[in-house]
Picture 1 (tube, helix red, strand yellow):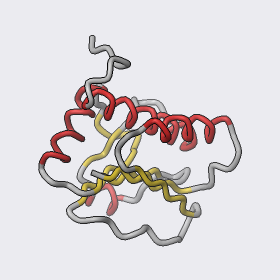
Picture 2 (picture 1 turned 180 degrees about the vertical axis):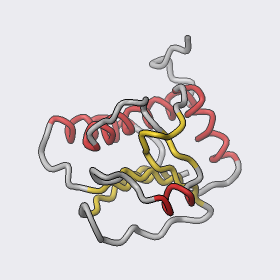
Picture 3 (picture 1 turned 135 degrees about the horizontal axis):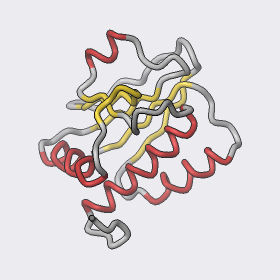
Length: 140
């Protein structure tokens, strides 16, 4: 299953970009990143079947193990692409939230979208590591 991170805004050269690159390189699953302008731009077509996850401060909070299990279930069900959308400063509109397969949050605090991108990259790497039985992740 391909993992596709679609983010509004340019990350450019920054400490956050270095973190994102570090974790994305470690992911053994196919992974793609797409940057869109803060407004406008075209979201690329998905491989089908796909699941769409919107990062949203009001989203469901999952443990790393539960997130890994979800990705594993989607993979095993034949989902070809899991798409993770990170909005601009104003987040996502109501229509997009209603159409998403999952609203995912990293806690009730508001996070800058560049940090969300780094945290998502780390959690994707952690989830795929859990599914591979890698010893890095130690379940509690």
